[in-house]
Amino acid sequence: MYPKSLKSIHKLGQKATEKRISSAWWSKRILFDARPADHLWFLSTDFPPGEVWDAYRAYNEFLSMQLADAGLDRQSARVRDCANRLFFAQLLNPETGERGLKLVRASFCHYRHCFICQWRRSLRAKAILMSALPEVLRKYPNTRFAVLTLTVRNCPIADLRQTILSMNRGWQRLIQRKDWPAQGWIRGVEVTVGEDGTAHPHFHALLMLPSSYFSGAGYVSTKKWVQLWKEAMRLDYDPYCDIRVIKPRLASPSSCDGRETHLDAVFGAVSEVAEHVTKTEIFEGVSGAVGYSAKAEYLFHCEPDWLREYVRQVHALKFLTSGGVLKGIFKDVREGEDKDVLRVGGKASVEDWLAYCWQPKLRRYARKRDAG
Ligand SMILES: [Zn+2]
Image (tube, rainbow, N blue to C red; front, top):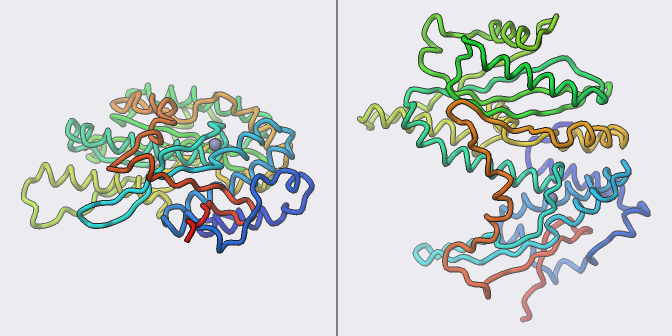
């Protein structure tokens, strides 16, 4: 099952939660009593993006149960307590009269596999990438972006760590080759699960390719990528590889400054990638590069033994790296984890804060209705 939209993510989370709701484990750990909904204002009603919070928090309920089943009680408790309360400042745009909410305080668990924390980390990584791009594109105006996927054969879950470490060594050999074409790159590791329970670690990389890549001798076909990766990994079989170039949008005909037009087009293409990460395969590729280590559907459907082993195998492995002219851009991804929520934006003051609590039975964030 591969949920595409948030709606289906939410549904999956609800279904999963309903499946377990009667278990003894669950009933002992209810944090808030569900009150009748007419006493509550929902976050998703006050603020439509709140639906995303509901969905990820519902995910965490189930992940917490999965972790408990796997005997990881401490981690289970951390995930269950992540972002139980969200404080939003009310913002008012005096010009348009538009009302908005901005998160100002929440307490996060920072557990590596927590859905909320992973989601926020991937948002931060995308924001860092997007803020670095204008400068990068000024320096390399003719660069084009491509998403490269590199895989190896599935391995038993017990060999996952060794497999990822050997892929890291393979990647190092690959980027040190004379014919390595990219000026800069971002690379993420993703692990999916085969039907037989084997692990399928693979790399998604966003590459910056010079214009020479597309002219004659510099071009690397998919077949050539397979060969390069096979040699770098010292494999005796042809691994599956995929390369997709991101096409810049067509510049508007009214625009006359060639250089700026190109920059706009490339920037436009990349911002689309970062903003609409689930729309096409390319977007999924980039999402993979900055997103999750293992997608929710795998963690939801795996056996407790598998999950326990997965957590052990990937412990302290770095999944998001960058190099070339993008080297080091993510060094602050983790350090900035709480900073963004402590800044109050706009003209909002402390009195304007609204507190939403997670309602496990309703699977939504809600606040009490104001009296009257
Ligand atoms: Zn968390």
